[in-house]
Image 1 (cartoon, rainbow, N blue to C red):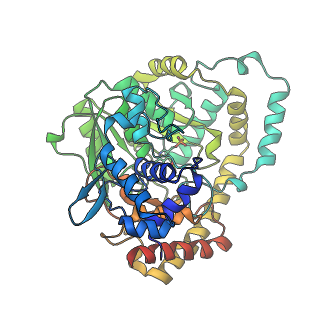
Image 2: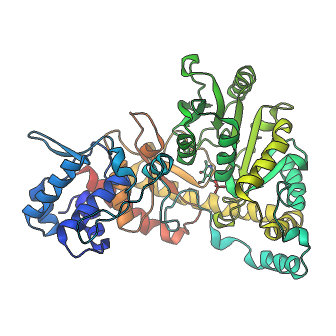
Length: 491
Ligand SMILES: Cc1ncc(COP(=O)(O)O)c(C=O)c1O
């Protein structure tokens, strides 16, 4: 039987354009190391086994292992095998995804240190649709007809203001619509001038970091937490301080960790574990931020989807003039490719951030923003969210039942609140969740390894499973494939 890394490499061999076997194998292993499919310290199969699994000569495998060894991608331990290096040498980072050419030369591109760091830690998945992709809503359920009618109406005779650059923070109609929506749905306190429309939360995090952090400043992030924040902080030379998460949300770091400049939290539904930040923790964090002169960045990415109990109000609205930069997105409520999100800026940051946004990104898309404003004002937005809440709640129940039936209740994380677009499937501490996710992906099932959301060692093992975009009739088959990958990793 083939090993999981054998399966992965076999698939990647097929993707390599080169006709020389040793180059294809070299590229397949190197790319798997660089993109994390073969994680640091993992053991490569013995050369004899791999040769057999891939139907190659043992010499070919040995030659490739030696090349990777000489270049520092792997190291060997006498008597116990070949292992992936802990850190890939810097000199290779700039060539991360460039395959070897005919003459054996790598097609080198000189990247900046920033660019190389960005690529080295790149985590966005190339596959964005299918069971059980986490965090993706059911984009097929979006009322395209209603939206396109509104868009057509608005686009028929557009004013010049809607066809030129946006430098007032976005469409005024959308800013007004959001103030009403956020007050009612999320208990956020703000006026229209405080709203800045961005191309999603990602862009908002980039802007906040660039505008508020100097190199060497400290930013607290949740551990585990959203990977997208880490890379933005890294390339801005911000000192990242991971803070543990428990059932009451982020546990503020000890004083020794350094005074924070930014504190990134997901208080309403911790990403990815799912806990809700307690009132006491919220008050403590607010007091701490005020004393430290820090800003809390509240990422409220999917709070609309809470399937039982009361909605959890935003941290931003807890106190007047709270030191909170609130960010939200339409990626989860509508669809990710819309690339629309918003920042609620504290008044002292309002004008500076709008100018900076216009300087950095040259905002636009005002017609679609105006259409979205009408979509919200005519009630279609809240109606869509209500419909999706029912749909996702049913899908979540279906998936949790499947998990309980096959793996028992303990396989469901104790943090999973009845909310959001994904849940966490617990795996034992010795399980290799990265290898399971890689094996599942080669068989068309998409999950993400929980350990990848941690920065420090001793990460919990588990899988993030999205249920929102998976119709019940597709779940059982995809789940059986995943079970096979889990069991074959254990054996
Ligand atoms: C916690 C969290 N924040 C932010 C985002 C990104 O949002 P956007 O698509 O608006 O950039 C995601 C996307 O998955 C997320 O999970």
